[in-house]
Amino acid sequence: MLYQMHELGRAWMAPMTYWAEASAKIFGANGGWLSSLPGAAQAAAGYELMYRIGKDYEKPEFGIHSVDIDGVAYPVVEREMLRKPFCRLLRFKRYADDAGNLRDLKDDPPVLVVAPLSGHHATLLRDTVRTLLRDHKVYITDWVDARMVPTSDGEFSLDDYVAYVEEFIRHIGAKSLHVISVCQPTVPVLAAVSLMAARSEDTPRSLVMMGGPIDTRQNPTKVNDLATDKPLAWFENNLIHHVPQNYPGHGRRVYPGFLQHVGFVAMNPERHFTSHWDFYQDLVKGDLDDAAAHRRFYDEYNAVLDMPAEYYLQTVRIVFQEHLLPRGLWEVRGERVDPSRIHGTALLTIEGELDDISGQGQTRAAHTLCTGVSEADREHLTVKGAGHYGIFSGRRWRTQVYPQVRDFIARYAGSAEIPVESTVDAPAKP
Image (cartoon, rainbow, N blue to C red; front, side, top):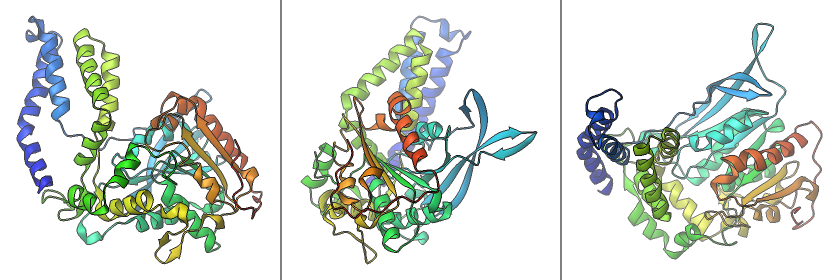
């Protein structure tokens, strides 16, 4: 019922939102007589702020059309390589002009970026993808908003997530592939590769795991505390709702995006209030660059998707409440997840010093589990001064993190076999 009430409220607010948008343009138009009135700048700024608070935020585009490599701009084409009901596998294909013919840059190693399915769209990793494109062939998981998936396509659980990752790895080709998982997908990615290794399938050349909840018993954050303070029934009774009739997935049980957004804002309400006030002030002063930066950030931040209920509840139980992966008790469709079976795959874990979502040690715990990987092929990086987003987006990602990720992948991009080590609990390299 809450979802239906939200949609009614959104429909009721729509005329006011459109009016605020039109008023902002009228009072802010250069050369218009209204823009010359006293207080016109304040009126235009206020109306635009009202419009942005009330408007709907659709999924943004990746918008990556070229990449600069050594001072040369190379065209980039976004391609859909595989489509599943709840996810699309995308590739960003780079081209170079060779004697008048377009050819793919074939020599760079392929990288699969597994984006989180945790509220925001995969476009949140736009900076990650754009940076990786300098030296890699880049694929990414583009998760579909659950409200857009008809119920006839069935449910989607954490087990299905693992199966999707396995299928994507096989589709691209595991022997030469490097997998980067950001935040939440570190868990299903580690499970997928563990299961593939246990079946003696080819596994990726390397795994790069960034800011993920491998073992949330290590330095638990407020996010972890929320998941453990309440029973699973509370999450199901209070956060799970049915998609209304006006969407293709009507009737599907989901954790709605608008509720997730409320939770995001509630974590730092003062910061968001200050950001919106600064936006208003920038518009009044005519500081268009800062105003544009605010729009870009919140166009992404406010665009959220619905998560399938089965997937969300399984994640809360398995990852945050029962810690089945680090305890060695997780079974996916009857198969035990055993990361110690992984061999021939190098491992790099990355954490932010100031990460308030996945605390220090939670991602590094993967080293304790992956005992089949030689110590020489395992590394850990703690990024000084970085929060959760700083390890995969922004200046620190581009200048501090990416060079080490690039060099790590390059080290294992050849054809030589990575040795198998059976040492138990070998420590991670500092």
